[in-house]
Image (cartoon, rainbow, N blue to C red; front, side, top):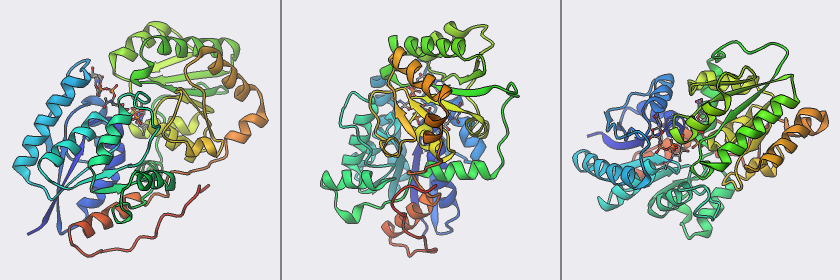
Length: 382
Ligand code: UD1
Ligand code: UDP
């Protein structure tokens, strides 16, 4: 009888980062894979699953407009529990730090099903930053039987928390697998960009930024387009109404700040590649942009991804209007400062994370490896 792995996804970044794992597992003839979506995101998840050609076996369709954390947590836990009861998988796999992953880990724990955590061991050690993701990742890590940290630092964090060596597999981040797959398909821009202008790409969505911080970022962006007539801002606006409403209000009718709907992954990758500078609070973009040689100003006070900051290719700027304007101004006007950050350093993986994860999941199921995969080389690749 073939073995059953249940992969759970819910939001856009999980769709992107689990796609390489799901596609690789689909190629294993002796593994019966079931992919379940909580539907924490609807349009934004479907957009990325479509791009990668990932078919979901069961879509729980749980998203509601402007859902609260407690409500979504309760509904997701109950719905996933039912799926796990019916499907009785041998392993549950989920990625990251969303409510979907925390509830998948908890539902698996209650059913005493081993849980494997992709992108394990990232920490700020501040439960309110990122909120509520730090707690979600700690919950998933506490309950996991198998941990796939993307970097040596994340593996060390898990060891320091008492996780045994034989439960930790240094895999690299599957986002680099996804990015390389997208780049190989020669992605195209979603729309023509103005010639002779430097593109500044902006994304924003974190809960800790709602309210005054969103406004401060909008003010900073407006001051930058006023100061630099040769820049053009592209801002794919997240569907969360807490971001969408203030951002649309700030830039309605603007020709220098181009708002657009969330972009399909190939279009977003092409836009990143065409950008001069990226301003974002996104986790995934912080990992992808350095691999493309694009400097990033992180619109957050702390990050659980310090590796690229340590390499000097990502800078933590926070959401203070003055600080954003000052640092962006330096990068937009000082060629040396810009060149120092635009170096194409990739500390998050080598594109083989999903292969390592599959080998390890096979071992966990008692199946022998079908292919060899080299260990992740520690340090950044360029
Ligand atoms: C969620 C995750 C966050 C992750 C982010 C990725 C939690 C608590 N938050 O934040 O960790 O970084 O996704 O983008 O797990 N919406 C739509 N359509 C969509 C997606 C969202 O309309 O396809 C709207 C809905 O009104 C929804 C709201 O956005 O209720 C918030 O979605 P939710 O998943 O709760 O939070 P995000 O801010 O998207
Ligand atoms: N992304 C995308 N289209 C967009 C904006 C982002 O495909 O319009 C991708 C981006 O390349 C990255 C991921 O979405 O891989 C990041 O998602 P998000 O910022 O929503 O979540 P986070 O990574 O912060 O959890």
